[in-house]
Image 1 (cartoon, rainbow, N blue to C red):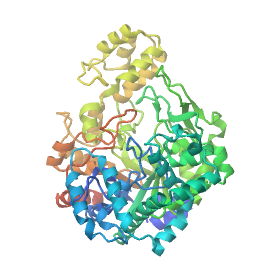
Image 2: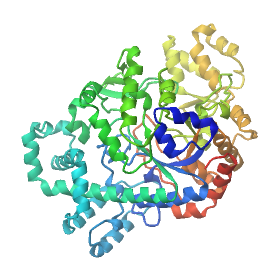
Image 3: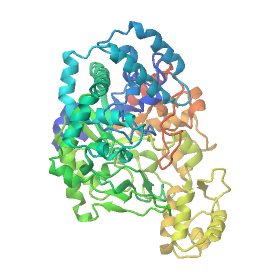
Image 4: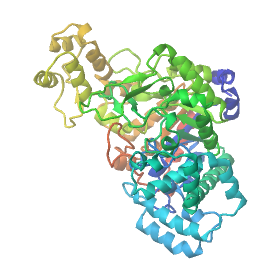
Amino acid sequence: MSEGYKWLLNTFNSAKWQKIGTERRAGVCVPLFSVHSHKSSGIGEIPDLKLLIDWCGSAGLSVLQLLPLNDTGFDFSPYNAVSTFAIDPMYIRLGNIKDAELRKYRSAISKLKREFPAGKERVDYGIKSSKMELLRKIYDSAGTGSDSFRNYVSANIHWLKYYALFKVLTSLNSGKEWMDWDIAYKYLSPANLLRLSEIHKREIEFHYWVQWQLFEQLQTVREYARRKNVFIMGDLPFLVSRNSADVWAYKNYFKLGLSSGAPPDMYFAKGQKWGMPPYDWGHISADNYGYIRARLRYAENFYDMYRIDHFVGLFRVWTMNASNNESGEPEGAFDPPDESVWDIHGREIIRIMCESSGMLPCAEDLGTVPDCSPPALRDFGITGMNVQRWEKSGNGFGSFLPADEYRENSIAVISTHDSSSFPEWYEKEAGTVDATAFSSLCRAKGYGKESIEVLTEMLFEPAENSDRLQWRKEISNVFVLMQAFGKPFDEISDVAGLYLLSYNEKKAFADYIGASSASGKVTVSLIKKNLKKIFSANSIFSIQLLSEYLFTDSKIVRSMKYHRINSPGTISSLNWSSVIPLSLEQIIESGVSATVRQIALSSGRR
């Protein structure tokens, strides 16, 4: 064990660190929908994870991090799920169904595979309903009398009964949200729950059966990973969709009049409004956090570690009125509003989460971070995240934080599922500022539209991308910036902050990783140097998106350098639908694993 990380063995999560070990580890992060194998039907499937585990072994990686696998709603966002427990049926492999005679369905399964070929540029989410139709036919001819199925239902009935009935009632109500159902369905009495459960017994059991099949397939993958010495990290969405089984069944656990989001910052000038209702922690705690404990216990069936999504929201979450705000401005407030209680409030929830399972928690502590968050992470022995492009040293002109100054209890990453890829960032975003953020800062100083246009033309190069602004070379210091505004430093300190973080950023980054920045373009050499830099970080874990590793192949980087998973704050078919253009079999054969393995070994990671 590394001496540098042994202090983690003396934290609240010491037993979990004993199990995982305090070695420097490297890993890969993957949304299952974005990969596929020759056996996949339309989308990455749970058994495909075995190929990823094999690839991890050959690449010298010991952590496989997954984006959430929860059953999704209309937008197919894994962070806007209709259940915090249920796995999405689209990830099931029909050919691996347990306790069913599949011979008579082989033709239908093959036909489905032809209708939804895997490996297209975007996921065709029609695969979900088509799979469900075929699953229903298989279920109707399969037996449900096995001990394994009965034991599964018995152990999970506390959430299955609500999830399955929610799915049935949604279908009966033509897909309407539960808020638009008749009162008898919207607010269930215990007697009505029993009555409806009996009337729709067969349909309800079908959803039990599907979740059992998913459970079995995912547990098989977990056992395979253990044999291959690869840890699986799951991802638990911080919130759940307003139109979800959880909110419908446990309305008192949520503040339905509010919407969660994120406050305005330099990256999202208007803030973010997510739509999901925030938790009513008073009612959840009154029930001894049973809801939180149960979801962690279920996840423990599949994962060794888990990512706490929006960790900072455990202390306080940004909330807005749930009704539409026609002005579009980020009106909102933190809940709870009293900053003096944030630390106690958050630590209580974190303690409950840590006590409720044997999984090692890892935190996504990005965004506007309260002062109480870093000490809590250290005390509990939880890793945070250090995102390379956002880690600045404070020395000005885009200076990056030295890799040896990253937190020991952190995961060092190049990109996230909510950011652009490294090639896109380096070529299109480094050295720029968000146009909306700049305009908002100017408006706050009393500038009108015409004045802002004049300032923009004076300070920035003509842009082909209207969302990003590139500083003119002649804006070479803060004094020139002050002259442009005609204001003293204290009145433009926020704009100066943007300037100091971004001006000359591309050259600063190239110097940081020891690369030439003459062309300003991404090369395989630049990508490899950057991987070596992020692997050299002081962080105990270095986990990169699969795409960041694939960019070490010159042919691959040319074909997918702008591969992006999600653009926060936007509703688009481009979100949560991007597919890696190579099959997992091709990735294994590509030779990328040898490159990654050499970098991992040279950095002392495994």
